[in-house]
Image: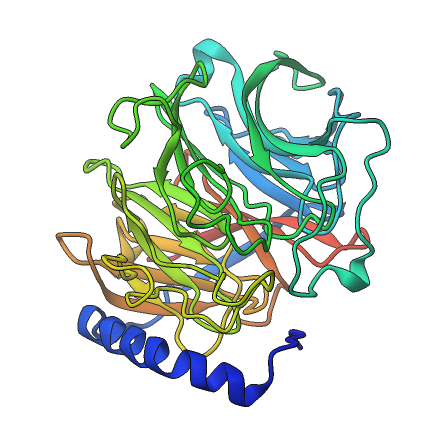
Length: 402
């Protein structure tokens, strides 16, 4: 249960108007998608014995690469051989929800051998983290010497080692609790999209200087990408809570991000330049007030509502990918989302203009544990990571019989 020092009556008085208007806005934007039948799926285990593998990518030759949150890369070659990849991850700040997180593979990997990671690192030796028992209290935690970076790696030809090339982007905030660190990645031939978390800090989502609670767009050298609202800033959109997944729609270039909700309203958002997605948890002094709506059009005029919302409950959706145009039946070219708390896959089909979900279904509910990372393999199958911890996690391959 979320701890909240604000009384129920006070919270109700403060929130009734914004909640009502937020609901009205959501109702005007979202129509209930049709519930299509789930595709018939075949699930096999690629490798087991992992501990909180987070991001996952698949190379053109079929090699699967994941990174465990505590700081280890693991590759699985096409023949099934597991490789514990040597890499310098000695600076990883693995605490709370932060550590070695999102991965993205260079679309020109066959030429560059390049992979990108989003990772929390200690900037001073032994940076202390807040005790886990305190991480959910609604106050701002101190910065004890850590930051989140986007890092470029060069993968060896035999996958036994990865050489750190450089830090592409630094200064994404993470505090001692490690809470709400993000951190989703998507790579194109000329840039990177980065989804970040708000550190459970009241002022960060609406700040135009902090890189937390944002979707960032940078060139491959780390400088702001063309088209950003402020040409000197990597910030592309703001007003987010915790963006762990970003995906680019093939053919249109539209950007979508999945955002984890408070006690409700996980959101799928179509990201536009300069868009403010309306999360503003600073209604009370000092307190990180999660009783506010995820999209608050009253306190954030012009806030952009979601393409889709989970509604009354949160499934804790961390990853998103676009499906191939063939092989997935009614959901060809659609979206697939993973769920941690919800322990399932969610398939969605978007409208032609990309502004709403017209059909959806769920699969694998409560059958394989908490599902975190997702990637599409060259053969059109899905590759997933589970996130149950204590060495029980797996990489799964999911194929459709459509």
